[in-house]
Image (cartoon, rainbow, N blue to C red):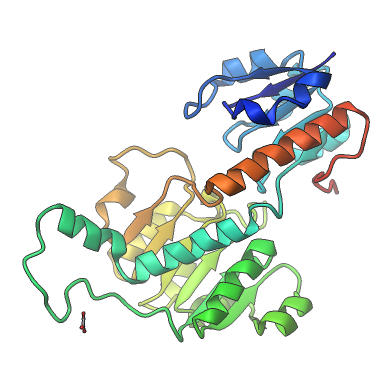
Length: 321
Ligand code: GLV
Ligand code: GLV
């Protein structure tokens, strides 16, 4: 019988069918990741491993698992997986696109509103008992309506985000590896080169996948050229940002604020320097975290696993170059 490992606890109701065709091991912890040693050790005789984005699927791991046919990542991003090495070894890689698009775009939009209107700071003020009365500029933020947004990465999530922006009467610019003509005509978005995007946008929103080309893209030089009231939102990966440069830019008021769902190293602890800045909002990587969407992502991973074990085509394989 094929053996499947799932590296984090998922509800048992998703596993009934899979258990008919495979021996399924589920790491029992809901919140705590496997250690590297546990990950290597538990995977070594498995045919399929369903991984989290915090599991590093590198050469060492793949060499350690001689039976491995497929790695199925519970995420749309797969920068935690060495794709070239998987391709060389004939290991299939799957992700969970599409099912999380709207939910993730919604989180990006939430972060934009929350940072623009200082929602976290304002709620904290009330909670701390520091609210002493109404005042004209009490927690005054800035508008989102009618402003210019620059979307870096015009994939499915970028497009879903753009749709929300058009409801707010925004001018929508985007930058992407390739022009997205269909999006331009359907959504009224305008292609901008990277320089125009960062210098003219009031909100710069990163939704791109992390690759060698995009790593460190948001650095000192880029932040210094943004508008001084610009707000930077990142729902892609922490690796897009040089974090000390972002901190410097917010502290020296080169940009107004940042909203981050992703960080270079996750998790961070409460001493992280971002958390001392009221104008930096950090969320614990919850872009796709609605119950409906997480259910759909888990179901898709399990369906991919079952198909691979039955010798069928997986539903959402990652294209190997
Ligand atoms: C989350 O970050 C994902 O890639 O799905
Ligand atoms: C605010 O609550 C207002 O009435 O302007």
